[in-house]
Image 1 (cartoon, helix red, strand yellow):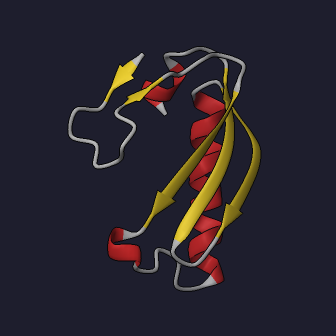
Image 2: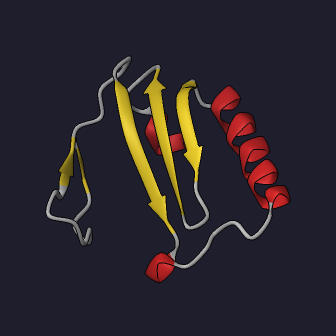
Image 3: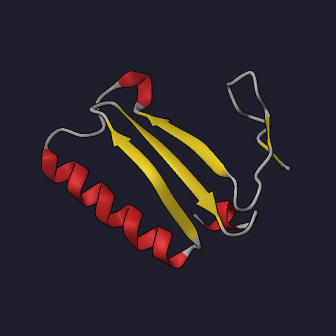
Length: 84
């Protein structure tokens, strides 16, 4: 189990399990845009592919919105998220 003591969410303990899909959401600060054009999204997807290949992470699904990102990831090991 990984603890995030400074997390601002109500859930401060997160269980990371291997071979189980996990939903990950990232938002821009103050809900500001993180992608300003399609080239930004393409670059993000390139980075995501590079790191998933290196870190034993499978991307099952993704959705890139203007101001946030949704990912469904499956980790080969529980420690894979620390490296990802």
